[in-house]
Image (cartoon, rainbow, N blue to C red; front, side):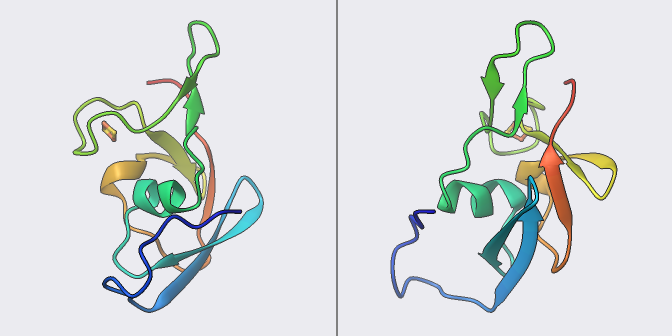
Length: 94
Ligand code: FES
């Protein structure tokens, strides 16, 4: 998977977690949303209305477009920091 980070810019310790059963390496202090953006995973859930892909919109915890499920709990990807070993799955309904 492509990594879109700018080389050498603010590199921090790696944090490994899974997204949709695939291993992802983020950096400590990344939100889930930013970690997945960096690997070009832009779809975080599907619309309950028409199944359309949904992802980060406001990136500040207001719109709830970025819901994902972390270890069985629904959270906003833009306001939740990555943790080593966490299991992130596509989110449910807004
Ligand atoms: S992108 Fe709007 S709440 Fe996360």
